[in-house]
Each structure stands twice: as C-alpha cells, then as structure tokens.
Image (cartoon, rainbow, N blue to C red; front, top):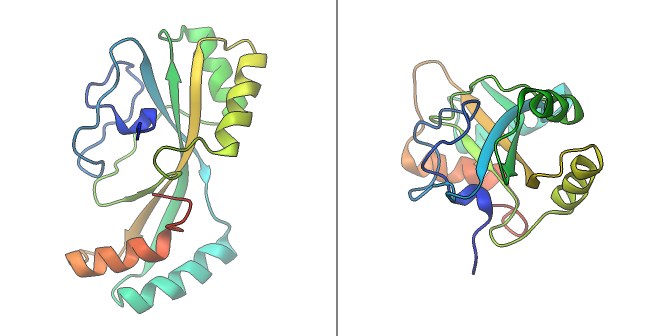
Length: 171
C-alpha cells in the first residue's frame, strides 16, 4: 500500500516547513522531486467541543487540564513556491507559516493510503487559484494535551490516542 505524501518527509526542503521534533513516525521523508510545506491553520475545535473532548480525555488521563487543537496543512508542491504564490496559498487556506512544536502532540490525519474528500476539493481549489504546481494539500489536526509538568505514560498516551481519532477513517 502506498503511503500518503506526508508520511514520507525526513528532509526539510521548504524553509517554512515546521520543525518536527519527535512526534512523527520514523522514516518521515520528502521525495526529492517535490517539496512539502506545513502551514498552521485555525483552531480545530470550538470551545464547546474542546470542553466536551476534555471531559472524555480525563477518563483516560485524570491529570489533563486542557487540550489545544489546531489544523495543520501539509502542501506538496512540484516546485518550491515563490513569495507571491506562498502569500496566495496562505490567504486561500487562511494559514500562517509560523513554526509549531509537535513534540508530545498527537497528529491526526486521514487514514493511510487514502485521499480525503477535503484534500481532493482543496487541491482543486488551489489549482483554480493559480497554484498549479500544488500536487496535493491535506489537512491534519494537532492535539496537544496540557497537564502542567506531568507527561502521560505510554498506556495513557495510547488511551488518549484512541479517544482523539476515529480509527476507521483516521490515523
């Protein structure tokens, strides 16, 4: 089974790529013929949904005091974008290229080997906006548990991961 493009980078080609420091799977590398840009999006959940999720997460890890969530956009380009194209991409996705720490975070993405309906539509929209060298764009969600100085154990991380994604359609 072929893995999606975002499961391939280890080499960072585009300067605005996020500094991934340990939360991504081993063997994460970018194909040499394309570049991947990671952009930060808006909050993934409303305040109400965040509170509801937090209540569920407390059953798996009682020390948790909060959960941060945001969308990340992973954009595969045939060639690096120039400044005008980067600006247009940020505007269309309503995203920024500021760095984000993913160490200790949970990254929820569409199931391996699939292209989400969101990705198909967003890629088509970007191409119609003059970004023809965009090969694919995918939206993933970053969840960062907050609990003071305490980190979850491996068993607690597994339980949290189960509650943060739908294993039928997400990885």
